Length: 193
Image 1 (tube, rainbow, N blue to C red):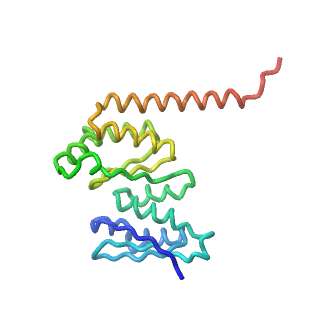
Image 2: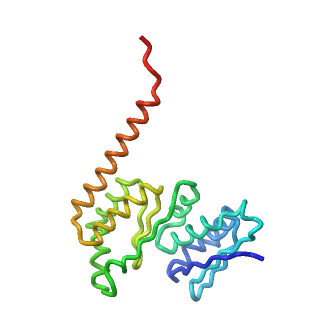
Image 3: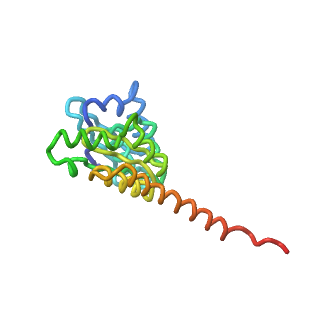
């Protein structure tokens, strides 16, 4: 008996999920040890695997990869989720905008910024990748990077200034650099006298 998970993929993202001549779908199946069944009319994608093959299979990574592609990431970026330390974080912007379409558009515009500047800055300062698609923001990064990117996005989505979001990110980056320097200092062999 097989187990399965279901992801609803927007119809315009089915092509990216399948890939040219099915190459992306096949690669997900091969690398994660799962079977994908994609309904081209509804977008419903079933990820199935045999429970006894769970040691070789990675259905949870397959679920994240399919979800990342569904939320606007290219397959190449989504496959970075196969790295053990990378996770997918999803933020539903309707939590900030409510039912107002105008508020949703305004929030997305703030997160993207002029010529994509705000999104790029968040990505650069957190070493994460961000996709803003539909009513969601998707983040791929390690848990710490994703958490700080989510905090900056939360600040902007709630109406905070770009400056305050960038300051938060800069503090994080500075702290991370200091932590790395501290680690380097403690691991350096003592100097000979």
